[in-house]
Image 1 (cartoon, one colour):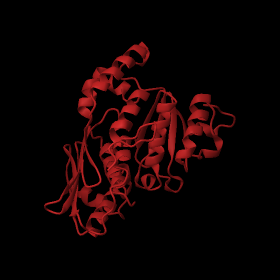
Image 2 (cartoon, chains in turn cyan, green):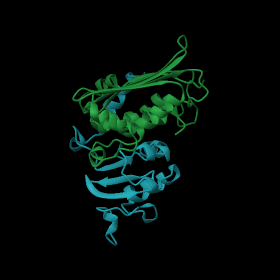
Image 3 (cartoon, chains in turn blue, brown):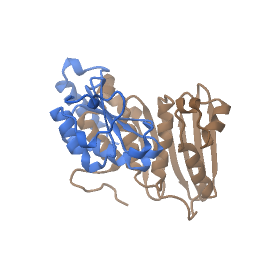
Image 4 (spheres, chains in turn orange, green):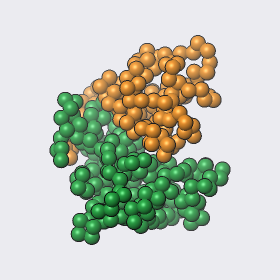
Length: 132
Length: 189
């Protein structure tokens, strides 16, 4: 393990981080991947890996995490993207190659990517004409 | 599921759902005894004995069980281990944690491949900034030991906030999957 590299990362981040981001505060954006048995079976791990890779290469400040199954097994792999802890939009039947477009549209541009989203209760995409 | 690493991700997900703060995982091939041992131990909420029986029965999915978020992960893993002529064990204590283990012969033809273990480790470690993991993977396919606690210590008090910065994601990816951006896989065996 190359632990000495971590110190450099820490120092670089400490210099770059504004006071607001410091401490235990979570990032503004949060992507929650459904990681139940069915999700894993349908390839949620590959999609999650791709999310992490894209967040890294696009230099986004996003928390990518996972939860138990969302309970909609036929449209796995799926994820929910939260903004500011609420404003949920759920996307389903994801594939690793969709990830870049999804991040670009939803997080960078702030628009809902209609063709990938799925209709669930409490989703802000249900409101017509709504942006993120 | 065809990969052992996918089963492991599923079981570890159970641990996380149970509120574990530390998850320890061993996948160790013992050539002398000719067995593969898979063990996952967590310090989550644990289960009472009656709940353990329920968790192993794929057909009991009461409302209460749904609330506990127990699905097919455990029954599937048990089926896998037993179909490889192995032994499955689960021990759980409420308030202390759960240990799930499977031991099966190393030369069994029905055993799954290890698969993308690096991907499993990356998903778990990088996706959970507040949970510590310890992995010991020692099989013919892979040899890897990883502990998040020294990483957390090295990052200092802002570890959770730094955990998913692009730099850290890159570090985790390199450490856990051996993948570099130029596509060269480190330590290919």
